[in-house]
Length: 125
Image 1 (tube, helix red, strand yellow):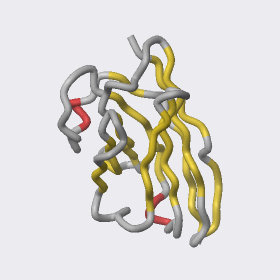
Image 2 (cartoon, rainbow, N blue to C red):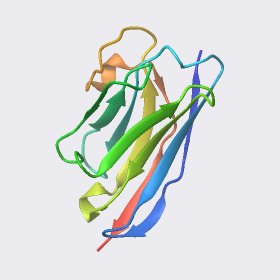
Image 3 (cartoon, rainbow, N blue to C red):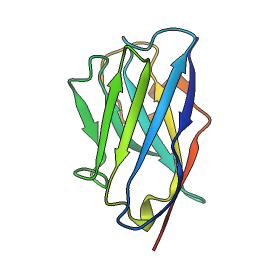
Image 4 (cartoon, helix red, strand yellow):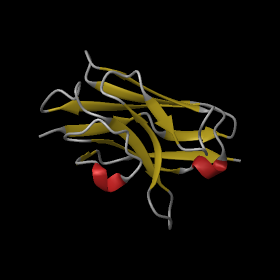
Protein backbone atom coordinates (compact mmCIF):
# COMPACT_ATOMS: atom_id res chain seq x y z
CA UNK A 1 0.00 0.00 0.00
CA UNK A 2 1.02 3.58 -0.65
CA UNK A 3 -0.08 6.62 1.29
CA UNK A 4 0.22 10.00 -0.43
CA UNK A 5 0.07 13.37 1.30
CA UNK A 6 0.04 16.67 -0.58
CA UNK A 7 1.22 20.00 0.75
CA UNK A 8 2.04 23.44 -0.53
CA UNK A 9 -1.35 24.69 -1.60
CA UNK A 10 -2.63 28.13 -0.71
CA UNK A 11 -3.84 31.47 -1.95
CA UNK A 12 -1.79 33.33 -4.53
CA UNK A 13 -2.36 36.25 -6.87
CA UNK A 14 -2.54 35.76 -10.61
CA UNK A 15 0.94 35.59 -12.07
CA UNK A 16 2.37 34.12 -8.90
CA UNK A 17 3.92 30.75 -8.16
CA UNK A 18 3.40 27.80 -5.87
CA UNK A 19 5.19 24.49 -5.42
CA UNK A 20 3.17 21.47 -4.43
CA UNK A 21 4.74 18.43 -2.81
CA UNK A 22 3.46 14.87 -2.62
CA UNK A 23 5.12 12.74 0.04
CA UNK A 24 4.74 8.98 -0.23
CA UNK A 25 4.94 6.44 2.55
CA UNK A 26 4.14 2.79 3.04
CA UNK A 27 6.31 1.57 0.21
CA UNK A 28 8.72 3.13 -2.18
CA UNK A 29 7.20 4.84 -5.19
CA UNK A 30 10.49 4.92 -7.05
CA UNK A 31 9.21 2.35 -9.57
CA UNK A 32 5.76 3.85 -10.01
CA UNK A 33 4.34 6.28 -12.53
CA UNK A 34 2.95 9.26 -10.67
CA UNK A 35 0.78 12.18 -11.62
CA UNK A 36 -1.11 15.28 -10.60
CA UNK A 37 -4.81 15.86 -11.17
CA UNK A 38 -7.05 18.75 -10.22
CA UNK A 39 -10.73 19.32 -9.67
CA UNK A 40 -12.35 22.73 -9.67
CA UNK A 41 -15.61 23.29 -7.85
CA UNK A 42 -18.50 21.95 -9.90
CA UNK A 43 -16.25 20.44 -12.55
CA UNK A 44 -14.87 17.01 -13.30
CA UNK A 45 -11.40 15.97 -12.28
CA UNK A 46 -8.82 16.71 -14.95
CA UNK A 47 -5.30 15.56 -15.66
CA UNK A 48 -2.47 18.01 -15.01
CA UNK A 49 0.85 16.18 -15.40
CA UNK A 50 2.50 12.78 -15.09
CA UNK A 51 6.06 11.55 -14.67
CA UNK A 52 7.82 8.25 -15.27
CA UNK A 53 9.40 6.31 -12.44
CA UNK A 54 12.87 7.55 -13.36
CA UNK A 55 11.74 11.12 -13.95
CA UNK A 56 13.03 11.22 -17.50
CA UNK A 57 9.66 11.18 -19.18
CA UNK A 58 6.92 13.72 -18.48
CA UNK A 59 3.64 14.76 -20.00
CA UNK A 60 1.42 17.77 -19.38
CA UNK A 61 -2.08 18.96 -20.08
CA UNK A 62 -2.11 21.62 -22.77
CA UNK A 63 -3.60 24.09 -20.32
CA UNK A 64 -0.50 24.01 -18.09
CA UNK A 65 2.26 23.29 -20.59
CA UNK A 66 5.06 25.82 -20.31
CA UNK A 67 3.87 27.03 -16.90
CA UNK A 68 3.95 23.91 -14.70
CA UNK A 69 6.84 21.52 -14.12
CA UNK A 70 6.54 18.06 -12.61
CA UNK A 71 9.53 16.48 -10.89
CA UNK A 72 10.32 13.73 -8.41
CA UNK A 73 13.01 12.78 -5.92
CA UNK A 74 13.01 9.02 -5.46
CA UNK A 75 15.46 9.22 -2.58
CA UNK A 76 12.99 11.36 -0.65
CA UNK A 77 10.00 9.43 -2.04
CA UNK A 78 8.47 12.77 -3.02
CA UNK A 79 6.95 14.27 -6.16
CA UNK A 80 6.62 17.98 -6.90
CA UNK A 81 4.60 20.32 -9.07
CA UNK A 82 6.12 23.73 -9.66
CA UNK A 83 3.38 26.09 -10.82
CA UNK A 84 4.34 29.42 -12.35
CA UNK A 85 2.34 32.17 -14.03
CA UNK A 86 -0.75 31.01 -12.22
CA UNK A 87 -4.15 32.01 -13.54
CA UNK A 88 -7.54 32.20 -11.81
CA UNK A 89 -8.64 29.20 -13.88
CA UNK A 90 -5.95 27.12 -12.16
CA UNK A 91 -7.99 27.33 -8.95
CA UNK A 92 -8.81 23.78 -7.87
CA UNK A 93 -8.08 21.02 -5.42
CA UNK A 94 -4.86 19.38 -6.59
CA UNK A 95 -4.32 15.69 -5.89
CA UNK A 96 -1.34 13.47 -6.48
CA UNK A 97 -1.70 9.88 -7.59
CA UNK A 98 0.40 6.80 -8.29
CA UNK A 99 -0.08 3.75 -10.45
CA UNK A 100 0.51 0.36 -8.85
CA UNK A 101 1.93 -1.01 -12.08
CA UNK A 102 2.55 -0.08 -15.68
CA UNK A 103 4.87 2.37 -17.34
CA UNK A 104 2.43 4.40 -19.43
CA UNK A 105 2.09 8.04 -18.36
CA UNK A 106 -1.67 7.78 -18.29
CA UNK A 107 -3.81 10.92 -18.35
CA UNK A 108 -6.82 8.95 -17.10
CA UNK A 109 -7.53 9.05 -13.40
CA UNK A 110 -8.98 5.56 -13.31
CA UNK A 111 -5.55 4.16 -14.22
CA UNK A 112 -4.13 5.38 -10.92
CA UNK A 113 -4.49 3.27 -7.81
CA UNK A 114 -3.30 5.48 -4.98
CA UNK A 115 -4.50 8.99 -4.24
CA UNK A 116 -3.75 11.74 -1.79
CA UNK A 117 -6.43 13.77 -0.04
CA UNK A 118 -5.76 16.89 -2.10
CA UNK A 119 -4.59 20.42 -1.42
CA UNK A 120 -6.48 23.59 -2.31
CA UNK A 121 -4.92 26.08 -4.71
CA UNK A 122 -6.71 29.40 -5.08
CA UNK A 123 -5.56 32.01 -7.57
CA UNK A 124 -7.05 35.47 -7.18
CA UNK A 125 -7.37 37.90 -10.07
